[in-house]
Length: 268
Ligand code: A2P
Image (tube, rainbow, N blue to C red):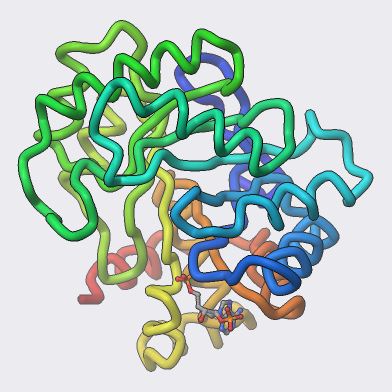
């Protein structure tokens, strides 16, 4: 798969195979310039969230790009703390308003639990929240809905009770953090896995084992790391604020051989 290819979601919507992640990119000039650089480098998929605080700058960069809105895929997320049916559509509409785009392409529940209660059981609440997500989807203001940071149990609770199935589960995914149980469960249920932090937020960039592989292909560790996620069948969401890195992370049209993939799989 190439960086300008698409995955097809279970509802038939096409999603560009590499997205630009904007977590931890500050609102204002930094977010605006980073998204502008990403679009200039060829990315057509931008991932944001209300919780990132940068939706307005992301939307502005998209609107100013001169690229047809329909050619850019925009994802945003319902804050993890919103766990009641009543509040969902209000938050979703706030996101659409923040971006000043007429619609969002993909809207995700940011996490199964509030960030200050990681791992807590919000199954009952998530089922109700999902009902409102379905209604938001049916309003036409998003082209697809999904989840993020959901484990197998959380996913099953939705699958067992939904009318409209989640199309995506966005999770942390990188060399040394393969999340096999979740990715396999998603694959079986036709849920596309998106991988955030494909560079482990920078922690694997100095890894000598990955460096050796990168050298072999004449690529950077970042490129091998993004490519690895794509070859695992997931959609990578690399983040950067530097135009040269942004460009490099999208320039990943090479193939890591099976033996090297196996080796990368073995790294902890
Ligand atoms: P910066 O944002 O300063 O450009 P992840 O995508 O796993 O969240 O990793 C993001 C981190 O990796 C950021 O600190 C980012 O730096 C850094 N980074 C992103 N792309 C590259 C690259 N090609 N080379 C080196 N560092 C990179």
